[in-house]
Length: 311
Image (cartoon, rainbow, N blue to C red; front, side):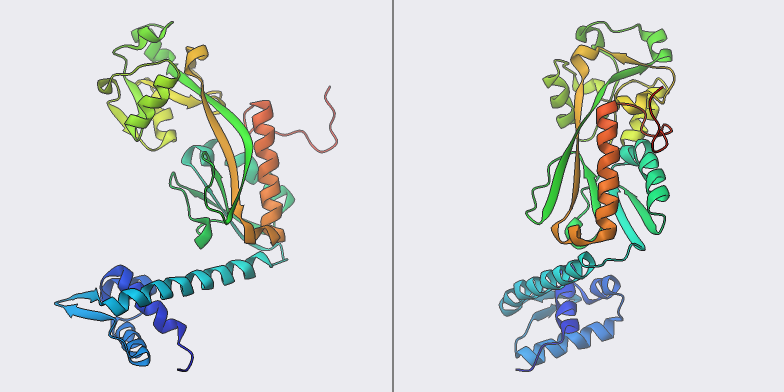
């Protein structure tokens, strides 16, 4: 058998995973007739019927299901090849994508980007604000700041340290409800909760603060949104200390009880460690995060110029 055209294999894999030619054609940016011809060509070359056509749907045959696993392995090999090529790149000019949560994007990244613009201006920095864990293996991002340890064996994770978050309330909220001085004083208070609520309530209980489900009547997966609501006095919220320092009128509540540690993991792909561009950005981000953890200060404050000494 002659070599198999990778485009045919890619068409087959996309069609099998999407479940229809129309969905696969949109995914690959090909016309439906072109995709259909590529799948038919693969079936002819392999002498295997890959799909049964039931109305407008395509159902994998037993032979097709066996071929799909091989197609996925070929795709993984192609992705590894692309990663390896990117990792060997030595030039500095180009994109570096950083995946971070919306809170880190707002309160941490501006200071980091400012330094990157000063030190490596030829690099284009793309900040992807998402609370989902971007797939570094597929190059959705080159570097990620996560709050959990990566488990994928092909990823390198470095624990930089921890930031801290506490319960906060605005001066306006305290004026209406009084200043809580014990966990019992929070009974009946509206607590602005992170999604999933059950996990949030569990974390708070570990701190010694028990919440009834009726108290968590405002829920979001966006930290920035919850923090702005806290600032406006809608309820009590768990806010990162470095963010609260930039919001006048917020007061820390029950600091001995309500501290929530926020780990900072800096993650990249093993193959990309050989890229000079990504390595430089990685080192700058690591240094800035380390400074932030040690100082606990506003991440966007003006840094001392090189060589400056304390007065």
